[in-house]
Image 1 (tube, rainbow, N blue to C red):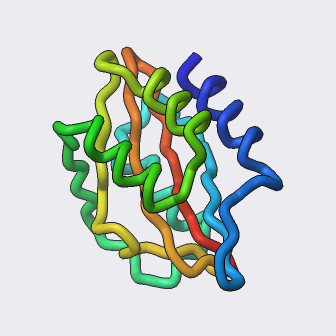
Image 2: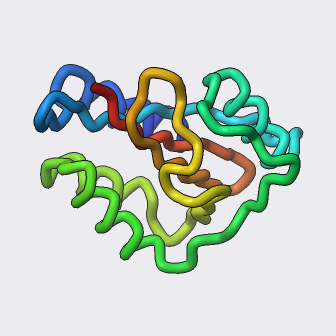
Length: 135
């Protein structure tokens, strides 16, 4: 359910991304296999994206305790409209856990100019939100 809800937001944004000075602010949603450690899923994702930075041997997953503040920051930075922000807040409620695994903009896929990753976990479902900027 988490994955499907976030995919709906991704689809809502398609073609309606914020555009400024030749760059667009987008999101991508990927579901992880709950039977595989998160660090392995992250490495696989980064390798499949051909990130332009060497992938560290060890991925450190860090829990974000203030999800509300983090969502506000991301909504503001990505210029999401009120409807998208409200939907994200409804989906990412007190029942979810949010994690980062690298510094913002540390890993950037080929063709992108900026990227922030957040891992979301609810019950046993694990999803990665890729906030990315393309030019």
